[in-house]
Length: 164
Image (cartoon, rainbow, N blue to C red; front, side, top):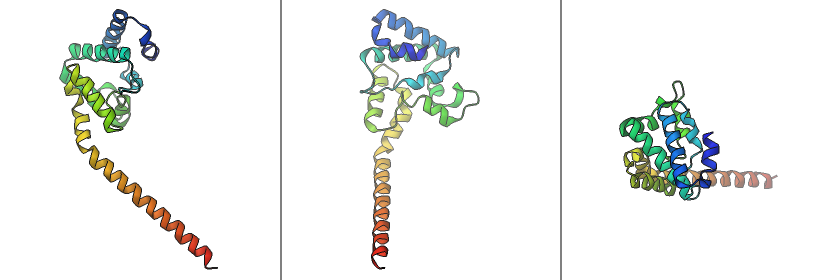
């Protein structure tokens, strides 16, 4: 149900969109619906429309109002939303809403949540963003070393074949 509504949210006028967001916020914060449904939400410039951003805004603001900011933040950051789910699965549920795939998407989500008054939800992304340049540099270095080792292995194999 959530996936269908989210996929077609751009068809609704603002008042209906608001009511749908409030309904889902209620279902989520009362645990009447699994939080994993939020895994379809990808909060970035390329995958959202103005309607989907309004929907996400109302959804999360309503949840924050009903649960309190601290409890909502804990819910997004911990295993609470799934009794026996492991943290890795849980983090995948919210990876689209709190992207850590690249700095551009992380900044976009941070700005979105901060603008709508829910900046504390982005603390984890802010930490990730601080360390992102170091991680990106380390990944690039590892890739370059791996490619150099592969090239050296190919060259050695080619030399070995030429000696016969």
